[in-house]
Length: 201
Image (cartoon, rainbow, N blue to C red; front, top):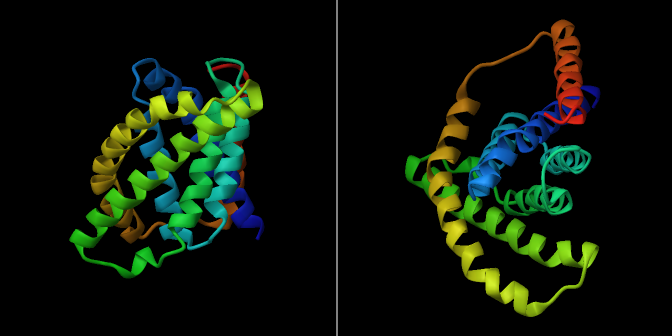
């Protein structure tokens, strides 16, 4: 349990650091779909490697909180909501036994479906929840952005057709860590991520 918690904090912190640095850069060029694809890839790798339901939602909560308290960037609350919703959507999608399908065509298809669905659900939920928390929700605003949501979700699905098979390949690698070094290195990496985010990287 202690190792699982440390792992959730580690990957959630790395995800949060990516969102606060590369994610901000990509957002300026309207490429937030790439940030989301990285996040879904990270969740896929950790689910395949550890097989622990709920872990990815925990990672999303850590990353979302770090994104929210980052002193640099725009739309902090909507970014935080998007991250957490993506984690929740991932948990729902991965209720299905994805790991049982081991052919390349199935992995590609799973990548398209899961990346498309998670991105679309996260984006859609953000457009509804952000106004509810910060201003006033208008259905007309949501309807106006729906075509954009689903068009960008297509790009997320295409990225997923490559990234999910890649996640399965990463899972097939034999990687192990000695507990003697795991905890000190994990704590060091988590601390570095948090310091960088708080400092406004």
